Length: 639
Image 1 (spheres, one colour):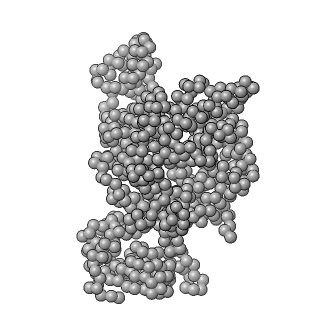
Image 2 (cartoon, helix red, strand yellow):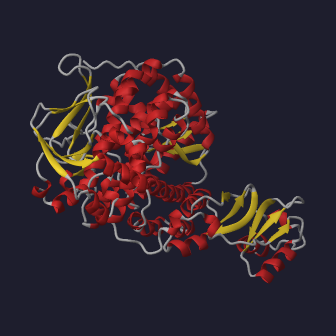
Image 3 (cartoon, rainbow, N blue to C red):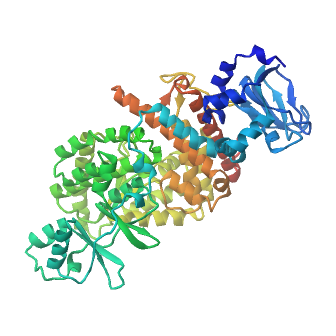
């Protein structure tokens, strides 16, 4: 063992400050724990620890090199269970009092380790909750959360005051002492009460003092004054039920999503079911600054495609703002999807005004990332129309005339608003994807019955569909039929599962990152195809098996935790991995857009910090582990 005097202390501190769990320590603490640090060299093939042998008095931190962790007799019936490389730890079970090693640790490359005394780490565990959490809980679950936050803070400008919107329960800033009135009072008395208290909305209650509706200034203007209504009528005749509520523990961001989704501007705040306050879009805008609610409101007020085109140009700026405010990638995707949905709905409303009422009920569906509410920057259009089966020849002729022109107008309007055409033509303008419900059912029945590669591909594309506008019962009828078909189609699920594991994460044998070997993106990592898409595929196949209706990847994983052992054990890790890779991709694309470039899904590993490299390696490793469990579950044999 080399003498401590031969080690440059600052180099050790700099190294440890970039790896878990030490990167969460300040320099003073790092300097304290490294004052007696030493270094040791292990040539390739050296057995550092033997299974059943004594534990070391040191925790070893790999400075350079790689080791394998195995059980069984070395070289005889040895089973490799892990590989570790730069920045990873060896022998840390000693901090819990382990006297014997549970595995073999063997250098597979010439390896250099820093040695930290076990008692120093034990003392650190007893005094630092982050270190204690690291050693006591699942590595990825706690590491990704903290690393994610640290990376956000170090990679985007600090946002003054923004975090309150995302980290403070709404109960702390909602309006208290909400003015209420009985639903049976007259419109005139209600208006007088609002005027006397200088409020823009009035909550109405029943005889048990439970909220049953709300009336706003706009209701008085649009439903009473504009229509010459009798002001002696009961106020309940113009109130707006049902009320959307939020618990005092929810965050401003969650309330924002409710307002966007339900197109409302007031949300009641409740505690244990009782009314304790109210929050309005104005309150959120004051907290947040420029709000997505304001953009959604502007979209709602537009009556022309030209007006929507102007508004669409500002949507990408929201993503930059959210990145600055430490919002998780999945939440950004939800808000952007809500805004895009609002844009699409308005285009469809304008189209109906232009072409008249449709000849039969229809439902406009979206799929792909938009169907999963995981869209960020504007991606290719993925949409289709399901319409009710015509009942006579006249309806059939009207359908042939109406929907092609209607879909073409919507497609071109979406292009003008920044949504590119789908290169594979999976759009409602394609006659194949504008069909009655009965035809859509035949599509899936045929695809499931004869799962050719083309049938499986089409199924995967459409299985994430989500209704956005029109008669939602058409879409839900189709989903019910899909689940009915899948009851006896284990062979089809086998093919879907096989597709989910065909691509593998770009992680090497020794947990090294594997880049593209050639082509336009040589030496880069593919974050989408070899990262995000793999989690999407895993969540999809398990959800289909369990008849789960959610389309969002994270919602699917959450719903699976009580149904599938794989997700019960590894779901949280998989969610963290998905979030982190999504974040890297989103940040990368935002920087490209700011630079005037077309966004893509490829990054250079060298552009990542050491902490980010370490985190993405763990994320890819988790995905790889779950893929193997999926392979076993569906009996997929790899030749």
